[in-house]
Image (cartoon, rainbow, N blue to C red; front, side, top):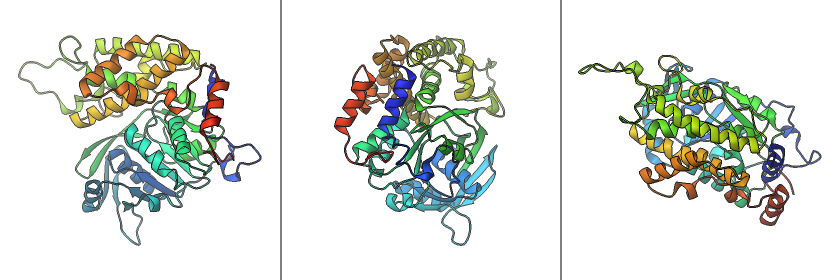
Length: 408
């Protein structure tokens, strides 16, 4: 299956409308100006996005279904940014002032929003896609941040299964402009490297350009197939956070006995030693082999993936080391949303990926649960055949009514 064939399938998942039936707002040569934004989630990434959008003059609503998250944000009175981002305090729920509006009512949060961010790990993004199906309107743009591998295709499939009839665009962004380290209500930011992003349907590249107003480090890719294979989060994050000790030592500087390491050298990059690099290289080689079968060949080299997802050794553009709770969440999400999709694509392409399979098995044993079956698999989003024509026929049998993308 070529990247063109799979790209056609991805567009079919989104129910890409014909040229005649598309609305003027969704034409590919237009760059929209997003004035009303909804951010779904109350974690660090969600608060960062809300602040970034408010800093650019957008009308922002932040939704969370969790009382503790909303209480913490409201009690703090705002989102405070320090470090490399737009420094300042962005107030919440203040009338008459530019402020982030908070709500626990999903329908009101997305009503009228031109841009909707789906944040959090894969399982939360899946939930949002399902529950949003009845609440979306023509012309809205949904952003999965981070989308990881084929997140937009899965979200489109779930929207269709949920009965969505609106003509919407999905964007799969493989990261945000900053890494965050939370200290109470304050987010300390360090800048990230450029990350790939793509729209579904693939001809709506104008939406990606419009999104750069808030996420300036996005690099537009021709399709979610290419942005999905370019996602190197799993091959960097899982080895870095799972492997350590004498057999696989980290890459930090040797510390004399009794000495204390400098806080500024406590970075994600320092978790990666030479043997971690060997594991990353094996995972990267498998990813390139599978991608090539889909016609995708212009992927980063090993060092490029490490630079993007591990950050710098120290100083600007260095990624903080996550606490244990966030580390577990990152590993689980990277396996479910990055490594498992690669295994699934490999099975369809007939390519062996033993290193990727071993990391999935190791993470499942350590974290509990069958992450391989819980992951984002192609057969779970309608790709159950060996040919694109069979897959599209299966889609036609499953889908009904007006589909995501506006087809009737």
